[in-house]
Image 1 (cartoon, rainbow, N blue to C red):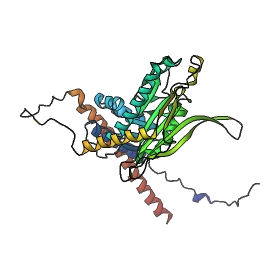
Image 2: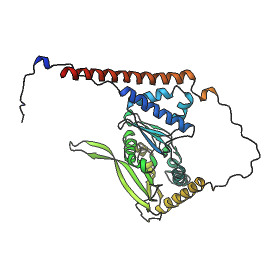
Image 3: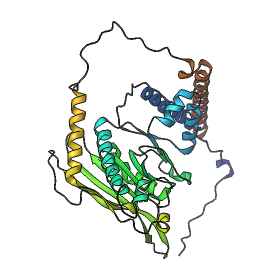
Image 4: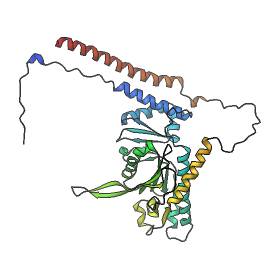
Length: 369
């Protein structure tokens, strides 16, 4: 059914060239990139102003490439960004995340990965037919993951386990908190879809560190669902949702669903099935064990924060001598100036366009009167 709209004739003198708003995006984009670089530099020197463990910046794909180009002007800063600063980029959401997890979350991740490693080692040293498979699974820690399809960005998980012969890790572990939790589902989706389901499990452990003491566990796995057209679609399905193992006041919750249940087959892509027929040995961490790891992590973080950890009492020196800074560790003046000049040019162009646009708009309004 079509609707016929009323038509009217417009006098020729009524036609005027429309005023096009200036391209002020250049100024905004330059400012945003500058803010990210400043934050990265502060983190490199241990002086972050945000203090956020999960710092979000809105950057489109072009801005992200510009950011990388500017960082490469300083080899030391680029090396820090690539090899030391944990970060994620979500092209689909236009989000850059700078990670700075605290001691509590780092300790908890370490305890969980140590336990999984111990169980894998026990299988590897047994007479099991899958002992060889278990022996080739490595703890990749936070090694960066890049996918063939750039649409899924690059990510540095809190922990990961990868078979020696696999392209991607089979198991990913992410520790989350209030800022990160809302992005955790998106992160699981990127991992599973970006790897074409070779990443078999994403484990999310959420621990609040302000106010509530609750802690939960969630898990995502790949699944093929049939859409309305009868086609198979790969999806990341949340199989465990916010199962509580520590309540709001810090007490243990005996919840059997709040545990990590894995099998050896989760640690490698389905392609291994042609070589290893039986990868059913379980890897299991109970809610009681997770709770014990959490309490130990909390105690450790509290002790350090309050300055109660053991430290040497005698200091038989008069002063401390810092090493001399070398030129490669600092932006050379010409490179620093080049970056600053680019920012200034973008700002001036945008300001000039703004002024031109406002003048043209005023003249147009006068003529209209």
